[in-house]
Image 1 (spheres, rainbow, N blue to C red):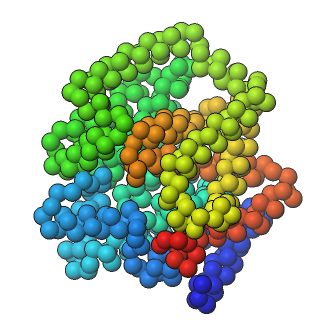
Image 2: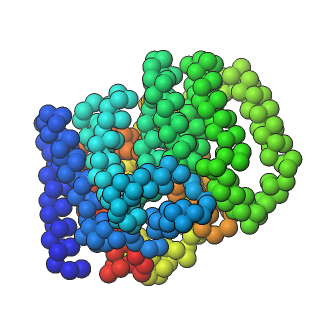
Length: 459
């Protein structure tokens, strides 16, 4: 590392220690504007390190960002490449035509701007769903400890905005389901998610449908509250599989992925309608049975009364899923970390601590029976989706088998409130230890996603 990087990291460490000590230890509430300024300083400083100090506003390769720069250039040349977020492409093109700057520069600056305000947006979303000012600040700071959040926060691509849209849409739907509020904003967010990032749209649609279903099984969700999200998801899927110009190439890309997988039989004309029909029938029958027999209540009671058994089973299952995902992408990890297991574990320190605190907080919710907390339900649903995605990934070709990691990017945004609340509940001495370690973990995660050639085997 050169002197500029070292001095910048020292300054960033000082800022992080001031914020974390002020938030977790002193806990004297500043005004909202003062906290927002601090969040903006932290977000901008972290993003600027990667985008300016390490890469000098040059798009690193290989990366999804670099791939999208090539896609946008192909669009300029009249080609019609697969695009998972057409509105992102057109937004970059709009700024290009307005400024005359290169696609590379605009994309890098776009990532710099969105990444810098990311924490502010998180704060406002957490506040909207009912978090106190302190809880919203805590969550917005602690999420920086995991690289599963940091890189999607910084990298200019459709999922960068898609993550925020999923968190916003899920939160608005919860408020609509519980209070009958914000239906129109929710539908607007669904539309924006569809045109910005198709995967985020699928995640959002699945998330809100399963959220409603979990409450409906306990007689806490009304049937009318599922009509709009169901129509939204169905309409989006119909547009996606139709010869709609925005998604025709992406549709072809999905077909190519399936054709080169071990489940290519799905492409036969009768298979998808058959699978959908069977899924709908089973879902209806299962819902009727589970609602009649009060299966959800029994299952939650079973979990609450048997945490001694549930916890180790859950941890083992999680370990297996993450190990399988690691094995599927072992060549990438081996290349990046120079084949060093020690370097890999060191760079994963923030993720390991974040995961451990999450598990502690998650099972605290189970033990206390706090099943109605929206974040608890959201993360439970996303973990279920992650399990399904890893099973799906087993049959897909290389470079298309990292779906569990993509789900984890969304999961971090819903999981961090449980983590920050768990830290607040700790004994003051233990909380102080966590707080003293947190800036170091943030720095490790930041180095992990920086793609700095002086540290790792590839940019």
